Length: 395
Image 1 (tube, helix red, strand yellow):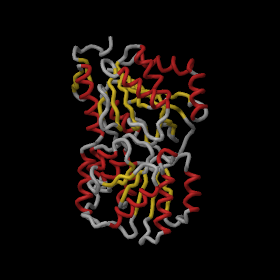
Image 2: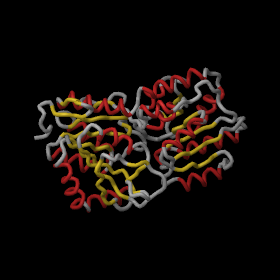
Image 3: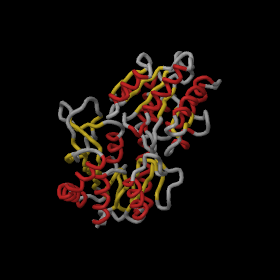
Image 4: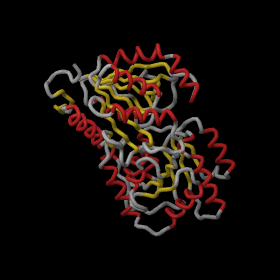
């Protein structure tokens, strides 16, 4: 069977000419591609950057031009360039049996409509918070309305950030952890927190991630005389990096905060091995892959109560703690509690590790394959999806 994935993920070519990208996207696409005989991957091409993880070798990468500008200007750019995007997307959608569109996103939404119009089987995976947050846009609401309208029959719909998704929309988690990662990562689950405690943030440095609130909260803890003052590693990159570096200086935290930049999986693992608490203060989120990356290393998570965070973190102190999104005071209070209240760190770290072990890429792949089997009557034969009648799934 043939599949096509259409993403607005920005990718670039490294020195040897391989297509690479950041985050867990390449790993997820590799897991998805393994279900099919051929896999076309349409991505947005950008100039070379540092770091990056190679896109799966089994995928045929199709670069698309990046829309101009940001926000409204970008939307106008996409609309004015429909004569470019629609025929290009349609060319690969027509030849595929199954279309995958990671939403929200302007270009994947175009592919969603093209797939529906051509009566293709579409896997629509919504990765942001299903419940509305302060960051929910009109386009997010429109995208969710489209998913609700078309879910079922030929559209297999998933939501990663919904505790109770609407009818015909299935829950699914997000992960970048493979079983090989779990076997390789051997954290010391018996250790007590370091002195000073080591905090870590992992993710994009953009407004919706709330990293500025974390820096401000750390500055308040320092000013209040909390001892020893925690250190913070900020792992990732993005448009807010310069602003955050300036904010760290204004808060008097230069000696406490390090910017590690975009890291590969091996270097990320090395940083997480020595971290005590992963803090993810997002204003909106679906299912953060950083939660699982941290837990795989026995590191509990302090997360904003958005998306699937309540399900992942559990009750207070089970695998971490929750804080109100965008509330710096609440974040500072929860940080102090997490670092000072007596607790069984050995039990806490083991609970984190056990949870991560249940949410690998292999399990994620199986969830998608099982859903295709149930909704479309497909079979999994030797690890590949097959139509039950042995013919193409879309005739």
